[in-house]
Length: 204
Length: 150
Image (cartoon, rainbow over all chains, first blue to last red; front, top):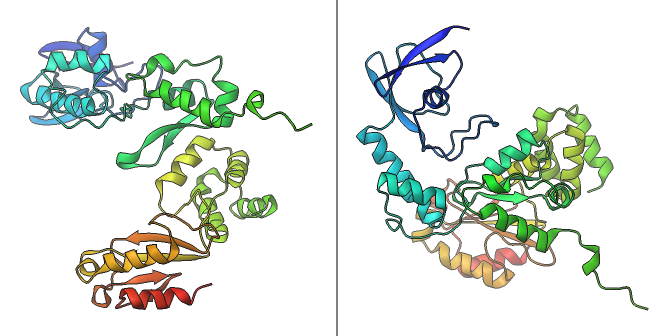
């Protein structure tokens, strides 16, 4: 395995080939905020909160560190003024959707994000895809997926699969940064699960 | 649409998971919508999770998960049609059919949809019914045209 030396926040960090900038930083004890990252799942690059400045051969660009592979002589800045400004904006936009998410509130405090900057539009789901990807990649049950697109995109259970598989799993529940997933599950259970006990008794 | 026909379409595409969208398009064009049973059959045969099929079927506007009417009415709401009174044409269609854009009436006669430009602005206001373009529509014209469809 060839070692790659790169610089993160002025520190020399050693990384293996094929690692991402985020992994290299975490290994060196440098924290980069993430929402959609999970070590058991493939990188997704959905939340863009892990955006960092990456400088190679004198050119600086903004990249999502959870997707960007380490490179020789790469210089990474995880807390520049520009990066902080971007993270603040992302947080403010997400807070308009889920103002009460603890994870977001903590980050908002760190980056000085104002949760009232944008008009509230509570949809609660941040589209991090953790539940969808966990169900597909780790559990391979495919009980939940995204439907629709753009601003109308949301998560949706397949009732027939969920009623069989979710009862004793629910491993995706603690992954959700808000509680949109739990709400979606309760709704699916109430409206769409086949429930023999509630069917009217056959007429005598 | 019966299961055998769905199987036929799947066989035509050699049961390839990468042909998923083609299979869905074929079912859509024959049946005018994608029934749940058909999607379940496609998922089973192509070995594609139902969540992915659901994602694709809701992503593209070409697919419909609800039944569509026999006649598809598209009313153009583009800028040129709009300034020439497309809204009043649309209102007429809504009044006569009793449905709003995106809906289908109970006896599956009409499905109403708005579009943003049909590419023939000089004919505005334009409406397209089952692929046939009706130009220079006025509310009264539109009512006359709709009467021809059964």
